[in-house]
Length: 130
Image (cartoon, rainbow, N blue to C red; front, top):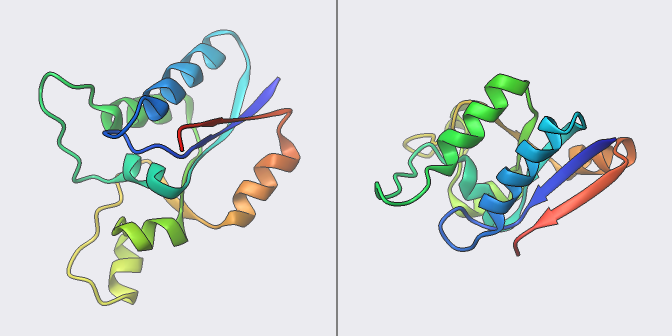
């Protein structure tokens, strides 16, 4: 079965992002496929390269990146939500005349069209947080 996950929760604000990560691992270990993980609203903070959680907290960014690298996952950050919250790629930072970018490696900016496409091509859409 093919899944798409939509993550609304920031990594530091709720259990939604951590639960989504555990769910993604369980899906892949069970032989299902993960078409896309789409981070929306405050969930875009999951893709910030500047996140530095304390040592006694989970480093969700590293864990998402590891999962992405190992399984070649499509980790999409909603571009509109990201701009509002200051999560920018190099090209967006330049276009918006901002001093720096902070989109983590392994994540890409995407529009709602990619979410609509994922919805059409997946058997199940599961949302977390928000």
